[in-house]
Length: 286
Ligand code: NAD
Image 1 (cartoon, protein in one colour):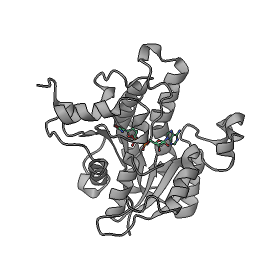
Image 2 (cartoon, helix red, strand yellow):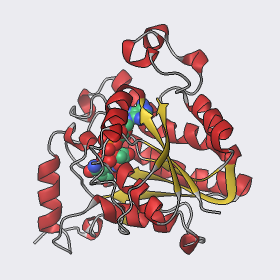
Image 3 (cartoon, protein in one colour):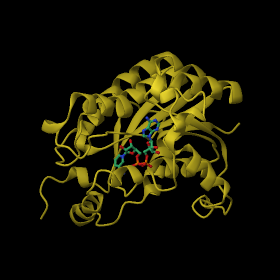
Image 4 (cartoon, helix red, strand yellow):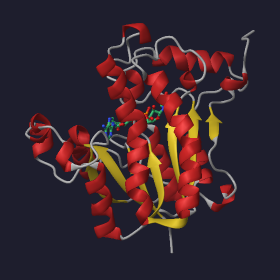
């Protein structure tokens, strides 16, 4: 039987989630995605109208099939805790069952089990603000959307993950080295995500023989990254100063993701794996 993957955080064909979906599809996995509720309509319409057909093309010439797109807002765990103004918001009212618990239940009802869980989402409303100017609310929202969202997804999907399965998330080196401009508590959120990767690897390993790793990816001009404001500079800096002097393709992160969730990585868990053309290893840039 082929493996089944749920990838949270796909809303267009530019980001890491999409590239990971493609790499897993190319390796024979069935693909389910979770798409942020406010982005759902545009994503589904674009898919239906064939806007992604070129970028859906796999190495063998076939098109990646997405078995089902689930609306998801990973900031909410259960329907009970969704505030009234969100429930009645125009963009949310048209969809249902999009809290983490409900999505896991829907996937269970539709497909029974999964083998692979991917977290490729982040949100920090004050990302452009320095940490010293970040509000408590902005900081906690960054942590909720970018870090606890992973704890919650793994908690709710673990019971339907087949033993031997694996999970990954995406992180950024601003967690461990200062990157001025990656603000709003996003650096804090990535530090939490990396620490949680180690603890969750232990807990999910013991509870369900599930491996948990995170990929520390180099800069990519995704939709989320453009919101930070200086992504082109980061990409140029990485190109100029890294050991490889080459651009980072999203597909290279996809390939590492496919490796990490495959039996080839059966002894790798709790790790932060760098896919950044080696930039993290440099301390001085000649
Ligand atoms: P992206 O825009 O493709 O992905 C982010 C996704 O998160 C979007 O689809 C967005 O709709 C979704 N999202 C936001 N809030 C959500 C919520 N509450 N519930 C559900 N979904 C929500 O951008 P990306 O850069 O590919 O980001 C994917 C991951 O990669 C993120 O964790 C990001 O921090 C990480 N990352 C990105 C870079 C980079 O330079 N682009 C570098 C390192 C790590």
